[in-house]
Length: 226
Ligand SMILES: Cc1cc2nc3c(=O)[nH]c(=O)nc-3n(C[C@H](O)[C@H](O)[C@H](O)COP(=O)(O)O)c2cc1C
Image (tube, rainbow, N blue to C red; front, side, top):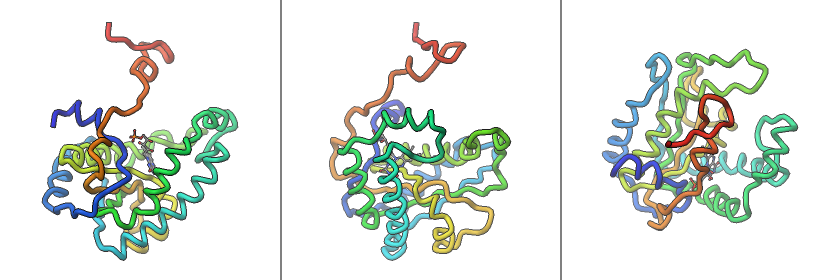
């Protein structure tokens, strides 16, 4: 598949068939995703492929716990660590009922998704350059999510659907116990992978235009092609 087409047609897939995903396909995805960039090329990403039903059920339970928290916060327009100004902006982004119910279906059927990838990172590899700033830190994840995005695109390239969730990170203590994750390794994401139920999920995605999100020389001045 052509790269730009993959980038433009890779939605969060929340409905999967129960067709298994062959290990060689997953291996090929990882074998390409591992060429992602990371700070100092330390490649601290570590991924656990979970296919056993009991383990998936436990992960689904942990995810569902945090999904319930998220939903109650989302209904109040409060998600994550936010200042009061950020909360006001977030209120205008409250999830639609349709999106909530799709994500609700996803949360309640997570245990049946063929493959769950638990994406972790070795903390010693991260140079968290914004850790002393008086705001929440965002930089550390940079050396994990480049790999994660490559995995999502790799899935698309293989005709698989995928969905990323970071809710599981809040249940890290339990996940660590369940998957025997060593100290100094953090849980950054879970990716659900399988065959999508409907091909039509690959239709056009709703995204902001370049001019709204990329700026020319100064913040707020739209960057244009001309
Ligand atoms: C950091 C992050 C966390 C996300 N968490 C969830 C989640 O918990 N549950 C879910 O169904 N989708 C999750 N998503 C997927 C987004 O909801 C999705 O990308 C967005 O709604 C756009 O949908 P689309 O890609 O299908 O157009 C997450 C995406 C990101 C980047």
